[in-house]
Image 1 (cartoon, rainbow, N blue to C red):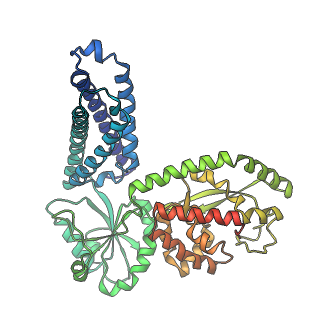
Image 2: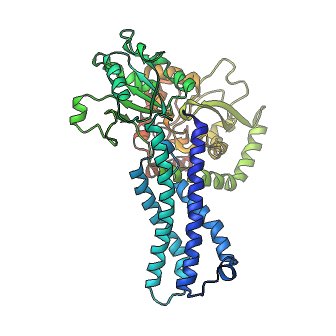
Length: 474
């Protein structure tokens, strides 16, 4: 049993548990503080329940905790939580949250000695951590039980069909407790060997994998190919990369000796997980917050420029002010990207074409806009909608992607992240005038993918601003 609706329901369970835990922890702490710190007699109804500060705290404190949990990515990979990791994460986040509450609220308390501060901190920490972790432990344990007893699982496809694939299948199926792997079928790499056909459906060839992932809501891919097929590993990964799935590979003895195989469960089959999260979840959260905040500020501050540019485009040549066209974004999903029109109407009447420095299709206003990237301003709307980021890779049309992947199939790796208004490739290489140049620029975008961090994003943004100020856009 798998799917988005179940994931949403599971996330909702955690959110409700966390909010209720924060609610009761703060309520109990408030009563404790009134009785011990303020030294008030215990008149629950008369002095505490009617206190406006209690009501305000019971509303705001759980909301603040929930925002902190969202920021650090508590609710990502909701079905893949381990109890030990849950303990460590809850300890860390509780410590951070209680410190914030201490300096924001508790430090203003009138106390007789500083020991009261330490005591208040300790009691709030124990209450919040105790209630929160207990609820999470129950939810995680119930989920683990369902996974181990095959009541829920992750739709999995095996890439491979011969001896290694069969051995992997038997190893997983013979586990004492299930790891959640729910095999729905296999795909061939070559047209030889079909030992798995007795145990599961044959879904097609490895080049069909993206369609299979979408059709069957696949969550895991396990590559279990033969030694003679190892030369195709790059092609297989190029087909899969960019899809929202966990990719695992069966290791050989060399991988185990080199320490590539990291086990977290005693009974699981040994597998190497490829390409875990590109950025830590907390950095991804901050990146998204910065995307929205900076885009909103930019749209407000640049609104006069926005208006002037729109009028300028309108009166410079016939046609609409904006030009919207389909680009391919994260996980290969299409979206409409918006720009100020910089070309004459019907510039692509003969089919999709890339622009060049002396392209006659570009208007005189469009040429100036491109130099200082004015035509890109409307893309801040795409960022706010979540289709793009400030920094990523420049999204392309499917027409050109189909040409690029013929010589550079690893282009699909870019689909792991959102495209951006600016990119490392854009800063280093600029606009590409043909598919060859697009392929050359790709190495900088792949380099960004392998080094993705907030600090790299800031550097790219700074260099982009310098290019705009110096008018070096092309």
